Length: 171
Image 1 (cartoon, rainbow, N blue to C red):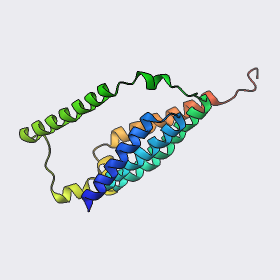
Image 2 (image 1 turned 135 degrees about the vertical axis):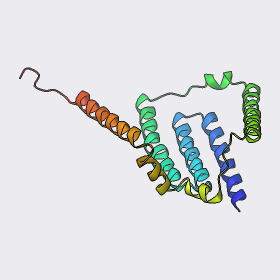
Image 3 (image 1 turned 45 degrees about the vertical axis):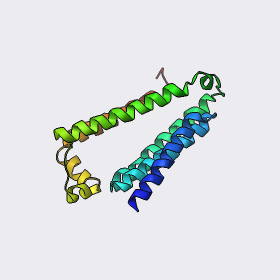
Image 4 (image 1 turned 135 degrees about the horizontal axis):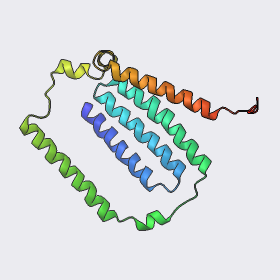
């Protein structure tokens, strides 16, 4: 049953990616990208990484795509058919086929050389949970987490200061 879901989600992901590339409208392309990001969250669910699946939906399919759509609508991009006339499908297919073959070769070499880690069933189930991510975040990666929080806070304060309108400059 898990294989069926994987094949379904993989087919959906490929179809939404191709629809995004070949869509004539930029808004439709952005909406197809949202659907593709939802399919990626399905892959995370199949890997039992529930936290990453929810974050994928909330952050990428939600917040980031809202910003993309806002920028697209503000710029009011027109239709551009010149790109379709320059696309060489044979070169794209050859490039994708080369990437697939390279990925398979790297996986085979990694498997024989022992570079790829072997996880037990218990480790594999605990990797994507909120508890495992929280333990790593607040033990091993506490300093980078805090530095990132300080940098993001400084960026927000700086953006607010730059956006603030100074009405009384003379005073």
